[in-house]
Image (tube, rainbow, N blue to C red; front, top):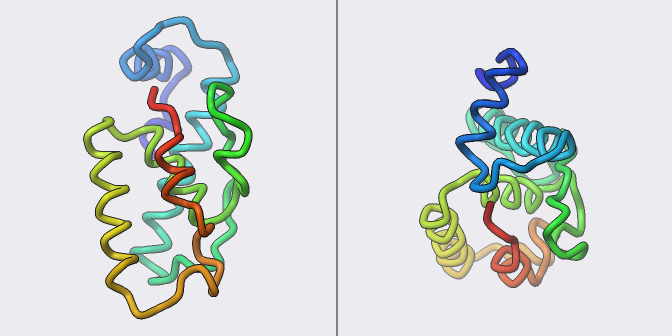
Amino acid sequence: MLYSYLRGDLRKEVLDYTYPSKNYKKEVTKQMDTWLDAVRNLRNYCAHHSMLVGMTSSVVIPDNRDSADVLPDNTNLYSRLYALKKILPQKDADMLGKELNQLISKTKLDIYKMNILPTNWKDLYDRILSL
C-alpha cells in the first residue's frame, strides 16, 4: 500500500532500485502496480477470508519478456504466484516454488481436479523470468 501512495518521483526511485536495468517504460510501472496489487490482495484473502480458491480480484499484467503462455489466466491464484515470483528476490522465489510443491505433494486434496492451480503450474512457474 505504501508504494501506491507514493508520488511519481518516489515510485521511480523504487523502480530504479528494483530493476537491474534502469531502462524501463511506463508499461513496466503498470506491471509493477498490478503485481503489488495482486500480492496485497493475496495477503488480504489469507488474513481476512481464509480462502484462496476461486478468488478473482485484480488483474495481473504479464511481463513482456515472459513467454505468452507463462500466465494462462491473469486473475486466479496462479497469477498471484506469478506476481510474487516477479517481485521476490530470486532465492526467495525459488524457495516459494519448492515449498509450494512440497505442500501440494503432501495434501490429500486434488488441487488439479478442483482447478486450484494449472496442472503444469510448476513448469510455468519455473519459466517466469526474474527481473
